[in-house]
Length: 352
Image (cartoon, rainbow, N blue to C red; front, top):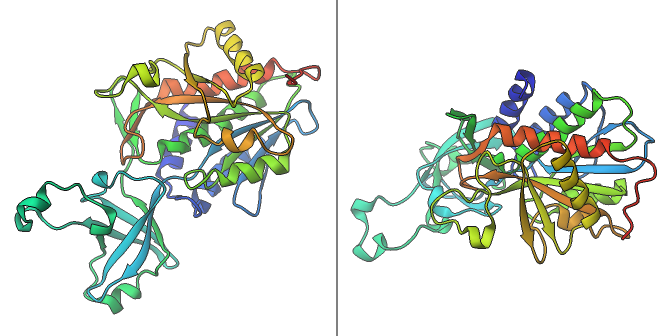
């Protein structure tokens, strides 16, 4: 991956943007996109970068830019904050984490507290943590001071900086799915350097995926594309306890994961597979007999239906503070998308 793209990815991953409050991350994405595309936003907060306006077919590339986080629900008299999850958390990974709360007066740091094991009863020690039994400590001396620092409804993310691991791997929060938002823009950048691109290509950094696929639904309705590719992460199955029988064989470094599912377009999926083989890009296949759990589920039934497919990147430790991906996989997803788009022309027919 070129240095400038890698620096953009790192900046995007480090910028807070939980579902419904993606503005800061969207700003980073739009600033990058303005270097080679027409950029705009919408009322939901989705970000659009368009290349080759007026071309045909029109293709939507969707990667959601939101991440899971927390939201303050109550401030007690001691100045401790009760909270709920924004998106799906395993509460066990929250215990002891540092939190970056986003407030109207700037960022406030805090730590997630839990009753220490030394003062637990024997039965308590056997129970798993629940969010309702946790709190955020921002160091306030009482409730009044805390209320001067944060408000109910303020959101936060875990304070976990990106770290570089051996063999071209990184660990960070928000990989699900800033990685996808990065990939669709990187694919657009690659296409901007090519000649004879027939399609109008719109990369979209979608909001609110983690709470209901809401951003992609509105974006797809407004764009009305002929086809779409949703980019997300999928479970890497080269870790203990993850069943390859149920989830497929997707190791870090094995390349893009192309989804075949009952609610996806075989026209698009087979075109992507053929492109991967012609470009000698290693890939694996993932199957789903129902919906995909990605933005594709919202896109594909918008309006009269949109020919939609999904390409994913293997990801370890999903919905945790340290999601792990292989940078070469991330780059190859973008390369595959760009190569597939180049095969499209005005005669491409997505009708089944």
